[in-house]
Length: 88
Image (tube, rainbow, N blue to C red; front, side, top):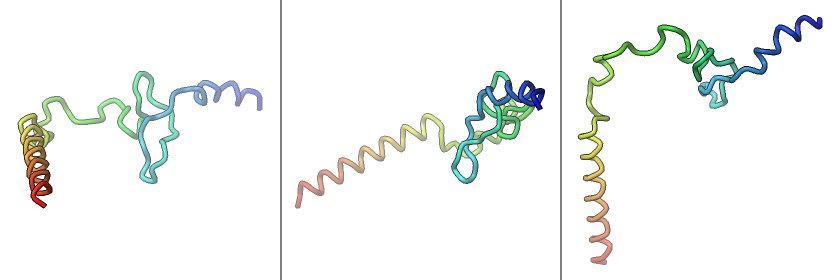
């Protein structure tokens, strides 16, 4: 039984995965060496999207131009709301 404590000690002391489970709690699996995620949440070799993934930019919603346009529209709407409240 004492050998069990010697073999599990390093695993219990290792960093934990930074991912969240579907229930909202933290993943309790150990992180892959040199990474912040466990093997099931993207720390495994070969996981994740390939470099220059064309599918990642399919819709363009998060391009700099789209984000800047949404900020400008939001600011314009704020100005209109303040102007309408001033008319009351």
